[in-house]
Image (tube, rainbow, N blue to C red; front, side, top):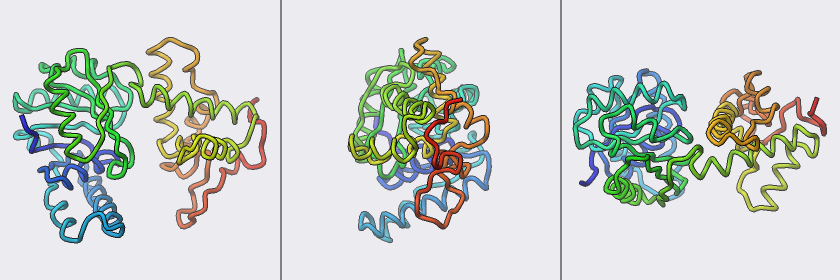
Amino acid sequence: MKIQKVAVIGSGTMGNGIAHVFAQYGYDVHLIDIQEKALQKALQSISKNIDRQISKGIITEEDKKNILNKIKSFTSIDDAIKDRDLIIEAATENPAIKLDIFKKIDALAPEHTILASNTSSISITKIASVTKRPEKVIGMHFMNPVPVMKLVEIIKGFKTSEEINQIITETAKSLQKIPVTVNDFPGFVSNKVLMPLINEAIYTLYEGIAGVEEIDTIIKLGMSHPMGPLQLADFIGLDVCLYIMRVLYEGYGNPKYAPCPLLVKMVDSGNLGIKSGMGFYDYSNKESKELTVAPQFKNKKKILV
């Protein structure tokens, strides 16, 4: 089976990035969101991201027209998935929402259609259990920003067939991505390793060992990370980080995965990172290109109370 027609459910940062990449490599893409306004914003984001690629000489103006022509937007799942070979769900990281989507698309999609989730932590086996085709359900965890990042973490559910795994592996390669297959455990590999690092960085701040900039600088320069863990947490969204830490904690039952109280407090206060304008750094001045530490962390060595 060769994938040709793709649907992406959810037009947020990940969804529009996935739609962009598939269209760039010649796939017929249906982008789905319940809000027309969200779809228009997504198409604008795709256009801007393509312009960045043009400025770097990656693609041409003619390529841009072809990419945008490959993407059609829909506010109804029913109309958008009837002829698709692959459906990728990229909705919010909420189990109830994802399970509801998979029940619906399983009932509406053709028998041959592969159902994939871009989830970063929710069990593929659990998602597959609400469908009548668990052997055709798989995880395709793209990294943000999708047009730039090479990795696709492919997650095999308990009943995912090897044939489907191979089809998705080849599909990821056709996007010039590097697919890596892992088994279905809480956090998979990426977040099982990354989130405890971020959580430990937050603990290091919470315990007063060092400040925000010091922690990020040490990890960037000492471990050759392109971004410090606290800045990365802001980029991901502190609410998402907290959710994944709780998935790890509940899934493994190990206290080493307990989320830092400071992370919980920041989420409760609405300081979620870039998306809210404030996290470990201050993003409230959108015109400024300088990264500045959030006011509550300036000149503070000890946060622990």
